[in-house]
Length: 324
Picture 1 (cartoon, rainbow, N blue to C red):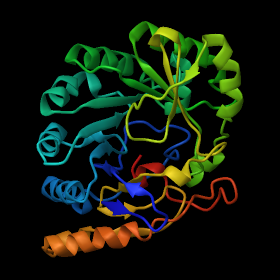
Picture 2: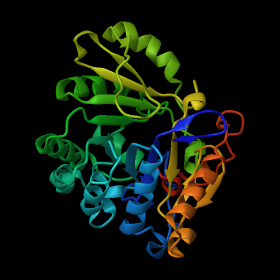
Picture 3: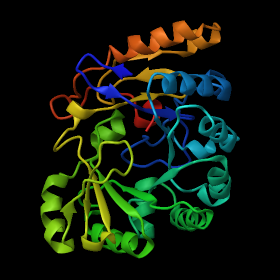
């Protein structure tokens, strides 16, 4: 098992397959940003599969593919199939903005993808356009329907509440999720990069005090993935709400995850700079022993906690460069 210096077991790896995206959400990628990683520096599918297998041998069982927008990576279902057949991989999921989902949902399911998270910050077309920089609403809705038709269940909707922009849309989103059997996850905006630092975050602790009596929500003991969300459920289980609160109530003491960027850099915390580059080792044809040692070295670099509130200007890299 991978245990960091603070006694936390690391069993979850988030893998970015591209840092590029077809949207420009206000809290993620700055408008006009062009400093994307060159495709020549992206890890190959062979490298990603090898890294996955090594992490799985070391006790990591949950893997999530992210971006940027992961469905922009050519032949992604091929990678998913290879990862799904890797010994030790028990849960394989993907986070997407949904714009390409209608095209790929069936292939993703057939390849062995277990779960989907889809970003949708409003049910108002003009609000989606304002946040994402593009009129992507119809594509996302069609993608969600295609995912359901492909057999994906308990799809999670990721919504970032932004003061003065989409807070009043939360009740409509709850109704939408109840009608469609989706899990709603509300996420506090994080100060990553210029765009993230300019986005006001909404304190979800105050919100749950309003939503709990309104929807008769009770804190759930069920596990809906390997991430940091705390879940609430309505009686009968017709609605599940997840809250991810890195700003108002951080969960660093139970952090079980690390991220690998598209160029093979392991980032040990979203809010800190510690990292270790695997790509040079992989390009040099390193042994499995050397790769394992590098992973252990990286885990030992994992910091105790982020400093989003104390030092919100600290991290200048954007979320898409880290891996969502």
